[in-house]
Image (tube, rainbow, N blue to C red; front, side, top):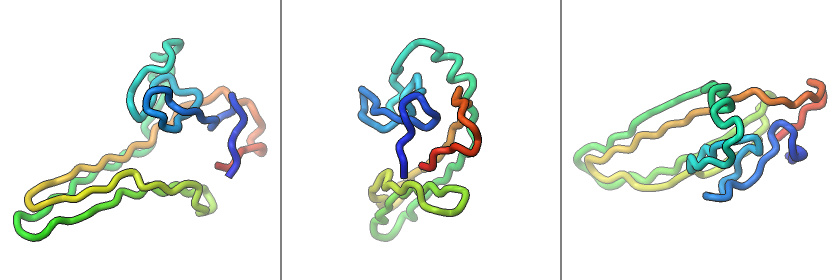
Length: 122
């Protein structure tokens, strides 16, 4: 895995509020929703598109012992190679409780002008 140079598409930085790894181009942190800069914040938000959204709910029946869960996120490239794998959250669901899980992937255009053959794999 390689790290893109600063200013390139896919370059990352740490959010100063929550310390999550975010895109360098982000005006709003997707994790904590804090504003990071106010220049073109509205324009960047209007250009993003939700390319994928999945939501599901798990309901524990009224009887029975607790269920433990782990939310694991895996990202693969176009060749099927694992690029990233993270445990996003863990917990337990007790009798007659429910949890709703939502995954969304937002994409936005970049100003990266490199040739298509010079992609950085990450």
